[in-house]
Length: 545
Image 1 (tube, rainbow, N blue to C red):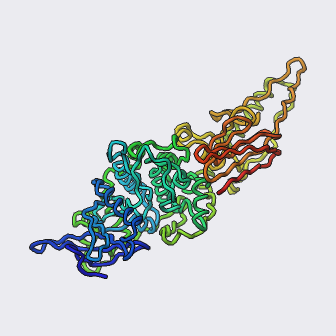
Image 2: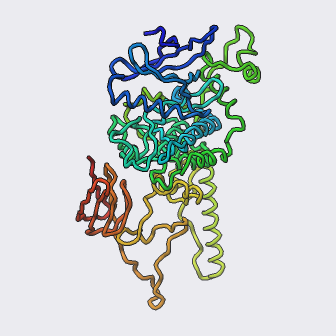
Image 3: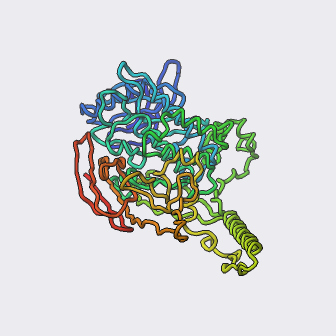
């Protein structure tokens, strides 16, 4: 209930969970001194629980070390008259990132600014000296709910309640999985040892969702959501919204690398690449202030100078209606719906993402390419007929597609996946995130077909002709299927003695009998299997506990 709490006065109850509740409060000082703060107080009974009180005290001790402009400050820690623990924190007047994203797509410069600022706070925590054998704090619960945006354009990471110091003696992240499943890293969902890169994966999820306007990992329940985190495909943002800048997409996909060495090593490295993007804002704080005022016109407190420069409430004559929220649209002109809040989506089933509609520009490019190819073929035929007078005149049997025909009649359905990916994107993303391309093959029994394209995107080598016979030799026919291995916890996969990597594994394999071995050194799991790979079929092995 509201009232006095030592030297604090509880003004408004903001909400609560199963173990604690949060209030807006005011300090009670001498000579009428007062300051607004936020107070998190433990519910009756939990302060006497040694396990919970120990966790709450640890939160206070960890948070007290975090003094940074992009982290919510902890000001005090105490017990009330009923011996209940409470934590006094800086009050950030504004909205959380979840509320802002729920209003619709955000301008890319604002997205870059918000994510960069959140990374600054996390990077500070990751590198904070703790003791002789500890350095750095991992948040473990990074999500849009825990990124607060003030009306003055500040971005602050909050709630280090389940944070954990990195120690050389720790073997795993935790006996229990903690945090929001939809924003966990694969290693956190697996209960593996964590470092700061786990928080960076969660930041990558937030960045993907802010750009695309969809939730990335949402299942019907916690198990389904964790399965999506561990095995689900991560579509490139531009495959859904082609207007997203390529340089920003590269940062997103590198943050979302499941392979730890391929992910950004530090928050600072990710910040550097974000600020190198063409859309990085010169003054992101002012851009955020303006956007908050636009999306929350009845609540935002905008400085007079900003309001005047934007034609805001301070310069608007009395009785004039404030500007409405802008309706954002996709590249093809279709409206973008507001993104539902996390609270409304935590139990929603994962939806199938539809492929983007081909734009008119893409259609024109395809038609020009087709015309160029046809012109080249005609030229080649004319030159050949001029060199061989007795040869029959060249003819073409295909007609140019009409201008109104669908893209599929101009460009094959798999043409996009066959096109080479730029080297910079390929290096940053890796094969695991390419939406349609299979994983790169390995040597030995797992091999690529003879007609597969080369790694640099050029044409594959063709079988050499037998000069003595004057006819091309028949190539050796190889038949292939696929091997897919899913496991929870993670297992290391070897096929016929050759390492394929950690699960999930999805590889193209020669048909026939093979020996499969699945291991996990931490759990001492070791299983050997004899499997048969059939042509054009997928052999799936699942090990879920």
